[in-house]
Length: 215
Ligand SMILES: [Zn+2]
Image 1 (cartoon, rainbow, N blue to C red):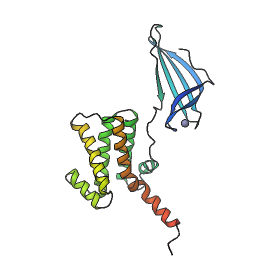
Image 2: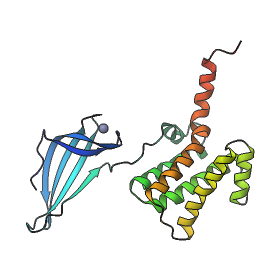
Image 3: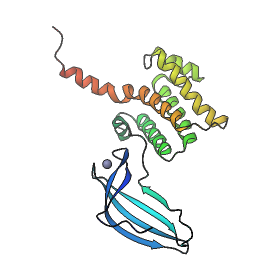
């Protein structure tokens, strides 16, 4: 397979657009070892201009043609919420920063398709959020009860949170391998719990200061 050429347009995943888009090839270099040739291309997304790299590996043996394409950064399947970046700054507290860092690792595991690690990480994140807000109670159910009673979640969310914690528990103790779709649901749940606590609360406070009071 011939090298892509500088100026050529090819389809590639964009980590900012979170989908495959047309990319312009900016530069090219070829290296090889005793088995493979490696074509390195820097690419620029036609939609958002983000630069990434593609490595095309080919067998040097002409009879073999199973080429592999690897992209850096690896294509992400999900956009990291903006509030997570603020958590990780540690402005509010070191505990909040730690939970933010843990959640960030969950997204990295999801992008690397390490779904068991991601499920365990989601479980640990939810547990740490509960400990931060209602203290380190003995069982998960006690924590959930206190968390719901304190108004951090609704009774509907409690059920979905319980199910999400169970996914992590099964991955940890019973060899359960969650599917991509199941992980997406677990992420929806954990984001739904965390966003009002760590993201929207301050935003909403600022908003209420801007909105004229009812007469
Ligand atoms: Zn893009």
